[in-house]
Amino acid sequence: MQAASPNKLFLWRDASLYLGDSFDPQMHKHHAVQCCIALNGHLKVRWQQSQSGQSCSAAIVGANIPHSIANPDGPLCILYLEKTSNNFQTILDYHCITPNCQTRSAPLMLEHPVPESSLRIFNDALTDSVTASQANILKHHCLKIFNGHIARPTTLDSRITKLLAYLHADPGGQFNSADLIEVACLSESRMQHLFKQQVGIPIRRYVLWMRMRHVLELVLAGASLTVAAYESGFSDSAHYSRTFKSMFGIAPSILLASNSALKPMICEPN
Image 1 (tube, rainbow, N blue to C red):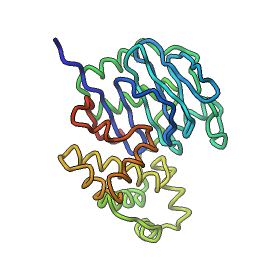
Image 2 (image 1 turned 90 degrees about the vertical axis):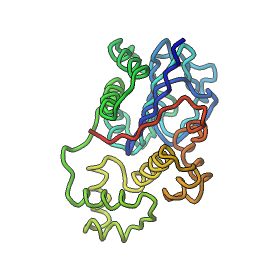
Image 3 (image 1 turned 90 degrees about the horizontal axis):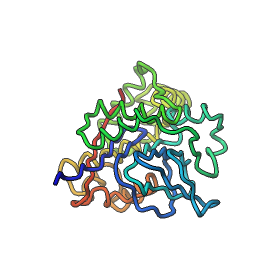
């Protein structure tokens, strides 16, 4: 009998993409926006105003909205987006939703079915090995389904490039505004604006995503979760676990358990 393919998790600086089995469908909320696609059958989505749930092929759950989402018919694809990201803004723009309304008080169900060609791409990725470059393509496909796109300039300002190099040289460092201003040679307001414009998310959110990814990099290289969390700027593994769960709605210990059929990959934008 052929062994089941491992679930997959791809992580970028402002997003992550999960392909695989449904999580525990308990009511919960988290910071990241959740774009969900049923790779077979239909999703079952519940939220506070609709305890009986609703069936759909794809849905967007806004940040901090209590919900439950699962696919009783098979695997699913979940794209987690930083709620302040330019990529998520492209989805809001298409649906004429202003950020101040916090997306919606309920999930947004897509009215159109997911194209069969897209479903084949995701299902093939679930069963095959995927490179970081191919993961970027999957991210593009997922955003397109939700009428979004990759919002990123072709080149970065040299001052932002220098600032990024400074941050990545010490992922666990404790950065203060004065240090960052000195590196970028910009006023604080200009630095914050230019960073968000060019990188896609605010500096502080970028640092948080960078640290969470760095923990996984160290764990995948053999470090314990405790050591990896501390070296990535968290006070301890409990602090990291709380932060991770508040972001994605699931404890990292579940994903990183020795018997977990999950294959994480750290990716960079293309």
